Length: 193
Image: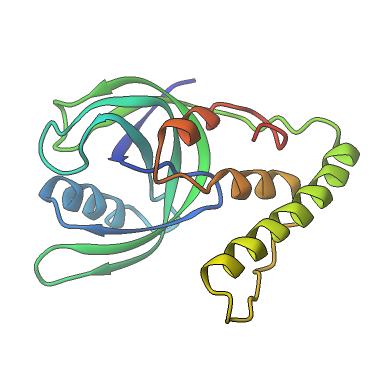
């Protein structure tokens, strides 16, 4: 069932489990954050992050076209400044399909969204595949770091054991160039990379 969700269009793609720090300086997004902060304790303080297909992040009417899929961002840390700005630490939570977008009722965009469920499939197969993906991704990170900093010893972070979280993590590189990752958001399940 569709629900209304405040939107934050960006030139990047957010995946579930991915950390996204944000500096909030535009008045419309200051309003959005203040409204979320003012919600009762225990409320879901979240908004939707949608990659911009055409346009820019900054300025009124800057985002001319958005991708059809996005991800909710849960606010984990909020730091406010005297000038009214904020620094946020958000984490991607749940993927959604974007329907109609309202650009008139609020200073920020509001979208009608359908939250997408995660389709897991066979748990035993996913666990076996996740072990292979974890090893290959660790090898990739090690090789990449060695090319960039050959004189430094690398410490690869622990990767999730859980197949769904791992699948989102390995899909996230390249999210700064949203065309391919944005198309991946609609895919379901851990093997949808």
